[in-house]
Image (tube, rainbow, N blue to C red; front, side, top):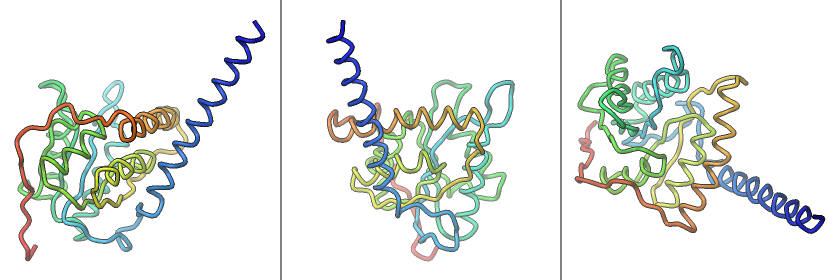
Length: 217
């Protein structure tokens, strides 16, 4: 029994060290590429808006969603991006993250022809890799909350995309924010394994669709 206990303690210790180490590494990779002000962020042609559900339980607004929309509009109206690639889940006819985000972006003044939709952004890895392979995006401003942004930038750099991030406002220390952060710790480990061990590719690739931006825009 003592031997089993010792093995359990050692394995648990190694797992915790790896978890913390990977999270620190991914955060450090993205550290100097995240911006919080439109005054300081460099301009890019394309902003990649990572999708999430608009509503949570009982029809309440998901503030992660709202703040990502706010950040995207701020970038576009400040001239720091010229087009928006919205990437998210389109699991069923009733759940369509990209279409819903596009509708709200249009309501906020972004022209429809400046918004491109990726309906197969089932995971952050899919969104990042498809941005490059399907939409020919080699340089991008990623838009989401900081905890998510660090992982997205890590994945972009690992796939030879010149990426920076614009940090959407996050939630205060609520239960929802805490759950997301815990989930993110595990997601970063998966992202690290996807890049360096499993060499994971998106679930779908599909038809090439280049984002068109005029030189004088």
